[in-house]
Length: 247
Ligand SMILES: NC(=O)c1ccc[n+]([C@@H]2O[C@H](COP(=O)([O-])OP(=O)(O)OC[C@H]3O[C@@H](n4cnc5c(N)ncnc54)[C@H](O)[C@@H]3O)[C@@H](O)[C@H]2O)c1
Image (tube, rainbow, N blue to C red; front, side):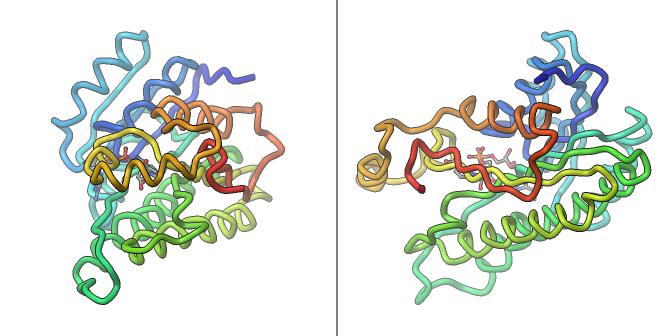
């Protein structure tokens, strides 16, 4: 049921962190993977891990915040692989600061990558999915998009937007057998969260009933579920992967 043999997955932000773990997990289940990040050269490590599993990996320099770059990338992927069955919108950034001091540039940068990037990649990949009358889109949101967080107004707004965008895509594409769901990770150990001050990390841990930070594989397992036929009757949902931090 979790088997993805013969499927092609496009994963954005696949050079490291959650994106790398997701690409490897989908490859373990049998998928070939189109790896996207700002620079194709950064993807060599992920590509090596996918190929070591005997699956095909190709690397694409795609800036998800730019329409032309996304259109070119999706065109190249469809030419190389013939189709896209699974899209994982994972690329994301933070530019934290209290609202009082948050500049327009930091607002725009985060919204452009996290929310507009999800829109652009979905729009580009959905055409093929609609034509083939099958596909699944998994958008990486965040528990911050559900609960807000002081110092992250731009990030919270972008991830809240990703959640409502996912529900709308689910409604628009369901009749073509294309599903769309969101995953809302909590505190997962990656470069993004390693950058947080130790006292912030300690405070976060107190809020987690399972009393540990998540690992990238915890999120990748949930993405695999939503990408596979095991979730054939699931669309428009938000699956929190946060050790119970948000219930
Ligand atoms: N780590 C966590 O605890 C956590 C929690 C909740 C949600 N998330 C979300 O998970 C996703 C991955 O987070 P991560 O922790 O692995 O981050 P990360 O910073 O380790 O990796 C993000 C990747 O996205 C790429 N990227 C950034 N901007 C891009 C752009 N414009 N176009 C293409 N690629 C771009 C980066 O180069 C990088 O490889 C993000 O959407 C993040 O918001 C992470």
